[in-house]
Amino acid sequence: LSLTMPFPAKSVASSAVAGAGIAYPQDAMAAGTNPAGMAFVGDRLDLGVDLFRPDRGSEISGNMMVNGVFDANDEQNFFMPEMGYNKMLSDQLSVGLTLFGHGGMNTSYTSPIGLFGSTNAGVDLAQMFIVPSVAMKLNERHALGLGVNVVWQRFKAEGLQNFASPEAGFSSDPSHVTNNDYSSSTGFGVRAGWLGHFGSMFAVGASYQSRTFMGEFEDYSGLFAEQGGFDIPSSFGAGVAVMPADGLVLTADVTQILYSEISSIANPLLPNLFQAPLGTDDGAGFGWEDVTVFKFGAAYDASEALTLRAGYNYGGQPIPESETLFNIIAPGVVESHVTAGATYAVSDAVEVTLAYMHAFEKTVEGEGSIPAEFGSGEADLTMSQDSFGLGVGVLF
Image (cartoon, rainbow, N blue to C red; front, top):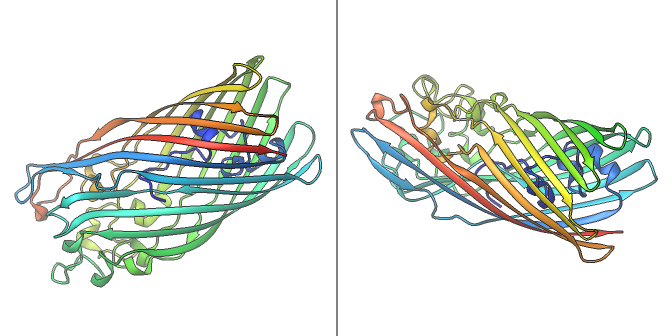
């Protein structure tokens, strides 16, 4: 399980409406967005898989040592599984279990990047969330939900030998910077939400995910700040769903992701690289800024068996122009996504869902991104994405 940027959907059906689900639960994956939604989806099991295809690369220009275009697509196809189960213990109370993949970065360059090291550069971060949840209806229209994030993650980095050189003094632990295969860690957090219906045509929801405190990546304690720390940032959001006509739902979410909480993600490359070694509390990171994500979706029941979906998602990319050098290995710069999909009810108990997502190509041109000690010049980042999802829902 590997991905380059977290598309904010937690299910195939949610992907088809651009991830908007805080006020619009569709299946037993709802706990990954708003646990309160599980009180309204009934008894069901949902299984799915998403084929994720990022297209990423970088360009270095005006540098005294290395210039050129670099292809980061040596590995491009990634499969992301998902599973959700929900059981109504009574008309008011449900319990569920939801599993889904998440992540932050993946690159696999087809050649070494001379500024970084002598072997092909790349990183791979994979995360798996397991979310047991409980939801309770306060009355027929309002519900609260609570879930526990149980997370396993793994990471590896390759081709960063120049940052691991003891002579350069960039790292507090040079033997734990690069080419150490996979290192894994586990951690815990919580997520909570509320969902309320106001009449038959309007719903409002709110959700919160705490910071997930993860164990350190011990084999990369000389790369990430705080001795290999890589916690998952908190996020919060709100959503609305409107039913203006029979069979039509219009929904929208806004979510804030607080990357600034996590030193290994938010610390800037400069001046930190020359003032605090990698791996220390103030060690250089990727310089990511907080992101606000807007999601808009529509679902239409074309018939009793067929539901059509579409959506648009926009989130300002997190990488400043001054931080593009280190982000050559994590070029998460896409901003605009369009989505489409459909669900077909094969029977009263089985439904099949398809979804497609395209993230338009985005380039961030570096400005003051490569320091003189690395030969000056600029690093530019480019990315686009596609994904194809298939899901099956079983209603009990």
